[in-house]
Image (cartoon, rainbow, N blue to C red):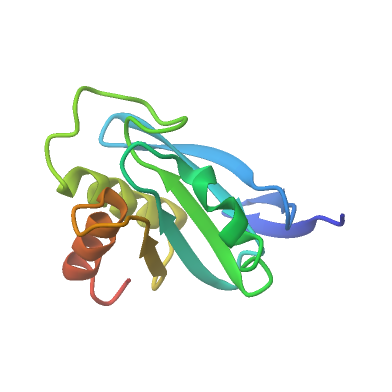
Length: 138
């Protein structure tokens, strides 16, 4: 499978359309992991997992989206490959991780989707919180 060349800042990176690239960044002193699929320059689609899951829970969905979107799936603090810094005390903490990821990647606007079966889902709540805080960016 061919890889797609893309630019981030002053460096060039390769993104395989079927295998994601794994990166981390610092969000308020906590190392947060995220995956990227597709080509930068396409419409960004940010996926947020539910409580107790990780970013790769989206793999089957992402397989249908990478031709249309630059897909980014975050692993919020305490989940997957992200660092855990005590308990998540507030639904706003995952939203803050998402906000800082958008700033880190310099993405605006982005489409956001949260995973969950109920209103109390962390992914859905984080996406809603982001929409409330940043209506022009999500």
